[in-house]
Amino acid sequence: MDTLQLESAVQCLQPLCRGKMLQRVDEWPGGVVLHFRDEAVALLAHRAPLGLWRATRKEEQPPQSAFVKQLAQRLRGFRLEELSLPWADRIVRFDFSRTQLSKREDRLSLIAECFGGRGNIVLLDAEARIRLAWRWDSLEQARPRFLPGAVYTPANDPSGTNGGPLQCMAPSYRPWDEAGQAALAAALAQRPQGCQPWWRLRRAGAEILYPIVIPGWDVLAETPWERAIALPAGAPPKDLAYAAVLAQREAQQRKKLENIRADLARWEDPEQYRRMAHALFALPDAVHPGGPLHTQDYTVDPVQTIHIHVPAGKRLHQQAQWLMGQARRSERGRRQAQARLAAQSAEWERLQAFRTVWEQGNGDADPGRRGDRPLRSPGKAPGSSSAASASTPFGQMWLDGFELLWGRNAKENDRLTFRVANPWDLWFHVQDLPGSHVLLRRPQRNVPVPESVIHGAARVALQQSQCRAMSAEVDWTEAHHLQRRPGGGPGEVIYRHFHSRRVRRDDQA
Image (cartoon, rainbow, N blue to C red; front, side, top):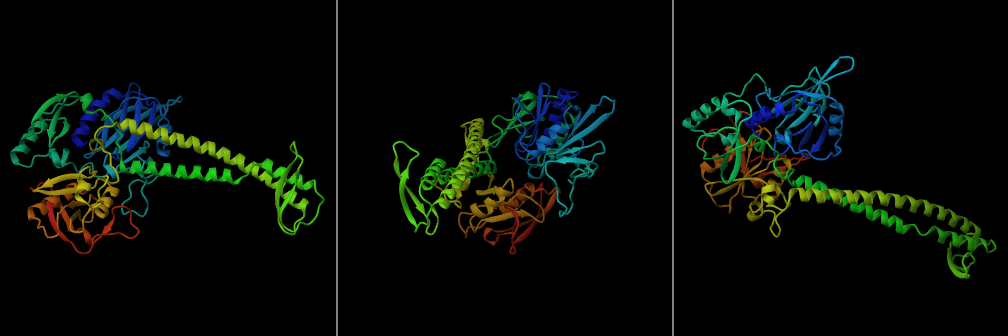
């Protein structure tokens, strides 16, 4: 959601949830779901679909992460007083209150910064001090904002407003010609407050629901606001990182089960040790020269011959005592291994049940539309063009016949740059600020790229960055000049040979 969509969602959800007590908090990939009486609100701050959504109420599921457990505990018994969008960017505020038996009133505020990978959810006390955060900052950061007990400050200055109504919209929605901007300003001025139907628009084959008519776009139909802000069906989507974590957990659990079964096989039957000990006790005590000893086992009927290995120089009764101790150790080891096997088998069944529910929840629809992100396309090399475009998890567009790809998070950036890119592809990134890696695909090394395409790719790199300015410097170079930063995280690179150009968001590609 951009700011305008989020504002409309806030206006629609506030009268539905105001004054209602928070019943429980459930975890959701990228955020949380707040359950009120007769309503559930999904607050997603980390991954698509970002923003504030009306969720479907489901049977109670215990929270999994420590953050969600603490959040549910601290907000227990509180009622929602106000749901607002007080700052210029996508920052939502929930104000809660609770009256004690002593008539003392407690107040807490829940802040959600819906910024994607760098978004956060924090709980504030009455003095606006941070008591709980989804993602804590470290003291080594240049400007840490999320520290225990620190006064919350928004990501941007609330007084430094958005510079006009155009800044309320996502850059890809804005018309850049003067006539379109004037028509958009008129549409924003006439936009009614409160819950109104949204407009279902289609652009480049994708369906977009927006609270106002965007000039220059064909209007298909009006859509009820309930459908417009409903959490999309099939969410949470299959995510590469999420699937990788699940596969890693399954591999770890499979290894644990193999180790436990190996322990069970290592510990022999304790009764076998006792039978050998009793057979040795029945013999006169003497020093054995070493090797196998064949004697009679009188503990079974009929009597059988038993074979016992006795070390050289060891007395028979001393070996019998060692065998009795080994029987006790084997009995204890088998008992512990069986308990571990039962616990880990139950954990394995839980993982398999979770995978089944997760896969069924995503359905068997087109994986490209649901966000399924396979590690690589079957039968394709990681660096091939068809492997990146047939079912690509990256952002994608075309400029004058050249394909542009960009990552949506650090792991996608790392994969795009070091696994998908050819050495002669052009790589773009906004200078000295976090953002997406943008890759301009070239079919061959000697294919020239027009200046207009380079300028358009640089503009995309600016739009897909965390830069809030209207213009910025963008670096670009060939992919073979890039190296991973030593000791850095995914997507952190260094490069020495590069070009720079300054681009504006409103430049024409």
